[in-house]
Image 1 (tube, rainbow, N blue to C red):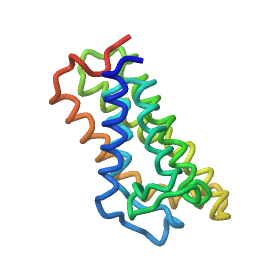
Image 2: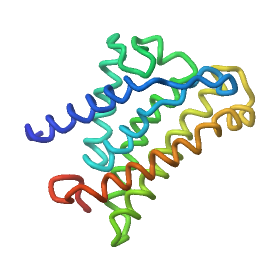
Image 3: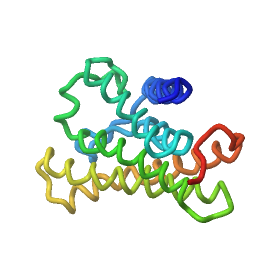
Image 4: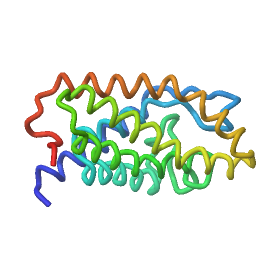
Length: 181
């Protein structure tokens, strides 16, 4: 792997960590899953680095968190976060970044904004929810429908993060970032 790619992976992992400094919002209906800005970083990792490197950036971030670094929103870190109600979402971040990056490169749309928005909505929201909601149901001992309702409180904010990610990508020069295959 080129040094340039390693640096980009590390920078995006650090950016996701920096987003963890923003205050989290805890909602009682969400069974302990907070609203954070860090999913914006996950979306940007896929959009900027592509599928493989975006997933590696998120994986690096989660590895450092597992080692005990308090980089999750609210100063959380350590292996224990992978056994709580947020664990499915955290695992989903890796797959979400991969899907976002893959879709950004594979969608046959001319508009970079449209590609980034669709990729962020599918990868950064739907894929993450596909991992997060079932594990939330398991960890919080909820039936799947109640977990889906609890998880739906995040949807408006996640859609706004997807729009923000797409607008940011549109404003950056395309050369040097994720390229279409």
